[in-house]
Length: 442
Image (cartoon, rainbow, N blue to C red; front, side, top):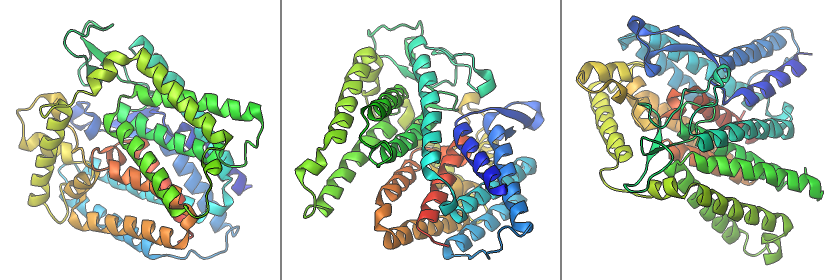
C-alpha cells in the first residue's frame, strides 16, 4: 500500500514541479523581499508527505534492507554539516535555518530517488513530466502572444507586463517599434519565477521527450508518433519564447557536439540509414519548421536578443554580482555569510543601490561558497564529481543522462536558480538522484 502511495506522490510532485503555489511564512521587518523571505510551497508539502510515507514503510518493516552508504553520500553529509554550521554566523538566523532545513529536505528527496530507482516506473514518470511541460508550454505561448500574464495566481503565476520593474524583457532595437508602449518584449515565464528557470525546465522536459520518442514506447504507430511530434512542437516553441540566450545557445551547441561525439564513438557500428531513420527525419523536420515559424512570429525581439555588446545589462550585472560574491568569499571563506543570507549581506555592505538591484550572485558555485563557505563548496564538488565519473565508469549507457547533468552544471556558471529557486532546486536534486540511482552507486 505504501509503495502505491509513494509512487502517486512522486508522480504528483513531478507534475507540480513548475508551480509556484506557496504561502508566505516570514518576511524580515515585514518588508517583502523575494530572496530574503520564507515560503512553504505546495511541492514542499508533497516532498514531506513522500518522505514520511517512505519512513513509515521502513519503520513498519516493509523495507528491511539496510541502507548502504557510498562515498557520494558521505560527501553530501559533509556538505550538509558545513551548511548547518554556517547558520551560526548568519545575520538572519530564521532565514538561515529555513534554507538549511530545505537542504535537508532536498537531500532526502535525492536519497529517495537514488534508493528507489528500480521501483519507480520511469516511463510513467516521463509521461507525467512531458504532460507538465505541455501545460507550461501552453501558458508560456499565451504570455508571449498577449504580452502579459494569464491571471493564474492559484498556480503561482507572476504578475507580468513589459513595462513592470524587475520583469525580464527584451529591449527592442531603436526604431524597431513593437506592440508595447515601453519598447520592450515580455519574455515567457509560465508559472515559474523567471524565463531562465522555465527554459531549463523545458530543456529537461525535451530531454525526457527524446528518451520516450526514440524508445520503443510509441512503437511505429503513426498516431502515436504524430501526437508526440505535436507535443514537441509546442515544447520547442515555448522554449524559444523564453528568449534565454545562454540556455538556448548552450542547448544547441551541446546537442550538436553530443551528436558528433556519439557518431565518432560509434563510427564502426552505425550506418547512415541508422542516423536518418524515419523518426529522426520527422524530428528534424519539426525542429526546422517550428524554428522558422517562431522566427517569423517574433523576429523583432529575436533580432534584438542577438544583439550582444560589452555594456549589455545582463553581462555587466553578472560581472558586478560576481565581484561582490568574491568579496564575500574572501571575507568569510570558512562558513560564508549563512544559507540564504547573501542578499541581506549585500544590502548591508552596499546600502545605496536601487532596491531591485539586490539579487543573488549569478553563479551557482560562487553563491554556494559565499553563503556556506569553501569547505561546503569543496564537498559539493566531490559529491558531483564522484557521481558523474563513477556513473560514467559503471554505466556507459548512462551517457545521455550524464550529458544532461553536465549541461545543467555548466549552466550553473551563469545563474543561481539551482540554489535559490524552488523549481531549480527540484530539477537539480531530482536529476542527481536519477543519475545516482541508475548508476547503482548504493
